[in-house]
Amino acid sequence: MPTEASAIEVRAVSKVFGAGQSAFTALDAVSIDIRANEFFTLLGPSGCGKTTLLRLIAGFEYPTDGEILLSGKDIALLPPYDRPVNTVFQSYALFPHLSVARNIGFGLEMQGRPKAEIAARVDEMLRLVHMEEMRNRRTSDISGGQQQRVALARALAPAPKVLLLDEPLSALDYKLRKEMQIELKRLQHETGITFIFVTHDQEEALTMSDRIAVMSRGRVLQVGSPQEIYDSPRVRFVADFIGEANFLDGRVVHNAAGQARLALPCGAEIDTILPDGMAPDGEVTAMIRPEHAEIVSDGGPCDLEGTLENVVYFGTDTHFHVRLKGGLPFVVRLQNGPSSATRLTPGTHVGVKIDEAAAKVLRD
Ligand code: ADP
Ligand code: MG
Picture (cartoon, protein in one colour):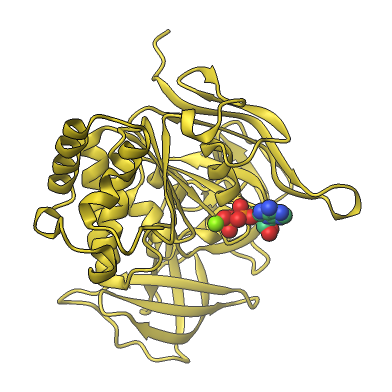
């Protein structure tokens, strides 16, 4: 059976810091399989173990348990400099007194490569990150965005198989970050190097990644494409952490062929989609994205009823905050356009209609 080549296989890796009473499990039996040439993102809140996992892959730390394979070979005992892996740190860690070109060539100099080879490679990297004009500047005299490019070029110069990027854009302001996101995608595409990118920013993860691993408290909760993660989160944490979500608890009154009809506490019933292989018969929670529902204000057919509490205008879209009969909050998002009906006023009785196939039952 043909399988896609794995760049990195993380197999049941745990990392415990300290011992005895003060032992802390930073990673708890993490398994992920990162494909060659993939833009793979580790996404999760601060403290969930993202940096620890990168440090294990880079070889700055050793796993307490489990193994890490690179192109199918166990690299547990290889020191960092013998791994075909390079890291771009959040702080860039450039040498401020050296020129852009010297910074980029530094790793190659350390490896003792011939001068001519280093010069050619530095030229190539300068072109790749569009910094040819800046080659003789000191890195203390260039902007934050330019320093970021130099840090990237330096990490790419030794042609690693895998590039690890630990929140590399977090120090940049919003516009520059958007630019660098596109730049990073381009670099990954042009070099074909596997990128393992760390961020706590869900929007960044969604827009940049081929696949995302969502982490919480040292565990990987779900791995999938941005669309899979957003449209079909497995658990509540993932649904909540990525984008906005409405949650409705209900009792299954009927289920067949991957669908379930739920009775909600307010008396209404809605149709929901079940995850593969799940056939529940008790209480479950369904998730509905705000853009998969609409407001019905003219007494037309609807799934839920409530009172409009707040209308928030976001430029591109408008959010309607509804308090459902029974007390639960529910948000509906409407994209603004020439004919948008945003004239509803708070206090109005409204109905909410849910898109068919958009209510997804969670596994917990
Ligand atoms: P993230 O990068 O997702 O913010 P980290 O991987 O840096 O998270 O840290 C995960 C957890 O492990 C945190 O609670 C952190 O305090 C703890 N941790 C990280 N490194 C060490 C260490 N060397 N000693 C003890 N605890 C650590
Ligand atoms: Mg970190």
